[in-house]
Each structure stands twice: as structure tokens, then as C-alpha cells.
Image (cartoon, rainbow, N blue to C red):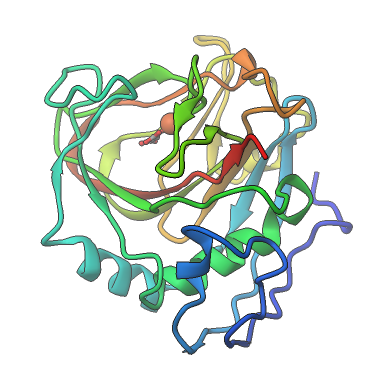
Length: 256
Ligand SMILES: O=C(O)CCC(=O)C(=O)O
Ligand SMILES: [Fe+2]
């Protein structure tokens, strides 16, 4: 079901100092906008996969130019991905991850675009943390997990925070396998499946999304601002051949 009310037509032509400071005026989010940045206009299109839990497919969220630039910024920064427990090198999450500098274009542009998309889910006490690239080689995966923490994490300023929403953007999909799988989400429309962008059939529960560069998934982790939603359990299925790379954006809901 393509819907009119959230067809996204981005208007962030030019992000200048302070334009988005009403979202947040302290902490990391200020870094998103600490440089004068001219951003590409990006016409993206949203499609609701499931209303409850809210899971939205975002087509053309990031341009091919931005994809190349993001991959380039990340390429020297990779290290083994960590689990929320802080452990790395675990078979549960066998990918490599790279934190991205939030103020460097196009990271800042994609960040402001994400803020625009998520405006109704964020508030002034939120933090945006560090966007993260995650890359998978054959055999690598991220088994089923929640992005929200069972116990809120202590932010650097001492506040307790949890991941209120997630955006996962597919950047590189020169691979077979590597679908993003939500076993507990029942799609309310079939067009993504008909288009071959998602897979749903009787052999498994839920829905899986094929990695397609530039497209993204957006979902809500903390629907009532406090309790993590167990229905947004998801994982990155093993890559069979080639390379898959994505970008995580995880706004943090912090206690005021
Ligand atoms: O690789 C994927 O498809 C999903 C990645 C993910 O869920 C994560 O990094 O938290
Ligand atoms: Fe995840």
C-alpha cells in the first residue's frame, strides 16, 4: 500500500547553522549540524509495511553519490562489530562496523534527512549518537536481536538512554543472501513482495527485505517511549557471496 500522507519529499536543500537545533541543542546532535553543509535534495518514497509495530520501507533514501561517499568515509574505520554487551568477534554478530563522523557530509545530510523522517518520534531530549556502517562478507550475519537495550545505556552525560527508533539503510548489495529479516512482522500490503523487494512465503514466519542500495527500513523500538517492542525482533541473514554494507542510525531516547 503506497500512501500519500507520508510520501517523503525532502526539502533539506541547504542545512545551515542552527536550522535543526530545535530538535536538540545539546550533545551529539549538535555535531550533525556544526558544519555549513549543502545537501542534495533527495526524493524518497515511503511505504508502510506494518502499522503496528510501525515498520516503513523507504525507497531511494540515499543517493548513489551519497552511498559512494559514505562507503569511502567508512572504509578505514572498520573493526569487528560489537554486541550491546560490548563483546566483539562473536559469531552472533560476525560483521565489521565503522562509526561515522556525524558532522561530515554526507553523513550530516543523511542524518538531517533521518531527523526529518522521524520528526514525530523524536523530542528535544533525544541524542543521535554515532551513525554506523556495518559490512558483511560471505558467511557473516547478525542473528535475531533487538536494537533497543534490555537495560537503558548510560550516556556520556550520565543520562539513561535507549534506542527509540532505527533506520537501516542498504548501501552496498553486491551479494546473494543478506536479507534483513523480521520474523514477527506481518505485512499489511503485498506490493513490496510483488515488486521483489521483500520476500514472504509459507516457508517462514514474517517478512524479509532484500538488500537494495539506497533503500532503507525505518521502525519504532520504543512505542510508549519506555518498553522495547519485542515484535521488531530482526536480523541480518548470512551473506552467501559478495559483500553487503548498511548504515545504522539509532536516535537515543534519554531521560530528561
Ligand atoms: O544487516 C542487517 O540486515 C541488519 C543489521 C542490524 O539489524 C543491525 O546492525 O542492528
Ligand atoms: Fe538491528
